[in-house]
Amino acid sequence: MILAQDLRDQLAFALDAEGSDHYRDDLDYIPAINAAVKWLTNIVNAAYGQDKLSEEFFRDLAYSGVFLTSDTSRVSLNIFPSEVWTILSVLAKPKTKAAAGVPVPATPDSTRSYYLPNRIHLSSSDACKRLNVEEWSLTSENPFEAGYQGSQLCPALRLYAYLSPYNYNGTSNTNKMAEIEIRPTEVNKEVTIVWAKKPSVITSLSQSIEYPNSVFQLLFDKALNYIAYKQGDQTTLYSVSTADIQQLISTL
Image (cartoon, rainbow, N blue to C red; front, side, top):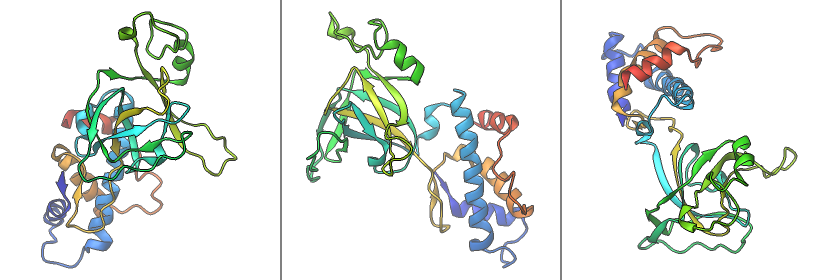
């Protein structure tokens, strides 16, 4: 992680503002740092979407949890203990153990999915392949593809898949929630999900920025730009260019 105070001190040095009150923490440094983090987050989205970024980048943001699927073999993103940025992995049929001192949560409704804070993931040999909605439809009846729903003569050859998050409740439903679906179906069964949480906004310089130290210079350059050249309408404040993506990849 990157210490916000370290970034602030470097910005003050570059601006020749050490010991002065020309730039304030609450009005200049912290907003500039948060703007730089948001800009970098947009770059990461673009680079990761093009398969140009390793999951290793998310090491300070990655978490795993054990969940109980619903009666439709789905898990709602609304029940995650932190805001989900992206799903990194879904593991079916995990081996888990009880977490010491954590009470067993009540799961009275079999139609819903649940986060199980009392379970710890140990291992799984059934990683789910991520499919888009077209692939999901095409593989349901193909016994040689991940996500095949039919019976397997050899259960050891069963390959799991999951569908990218979708809202299944319709636009008029006030309880809209994105869910991922797992196939072959795992109804009311444990699954382990590894996800990256969205980077937190800092409110004080005592906090850390949840990005690896390797991108310190990128954040510094952009935060310095925001302080030195404040933009009025902010219409291009978080725009991402091909050069930005390439700079991130080169840095890593």
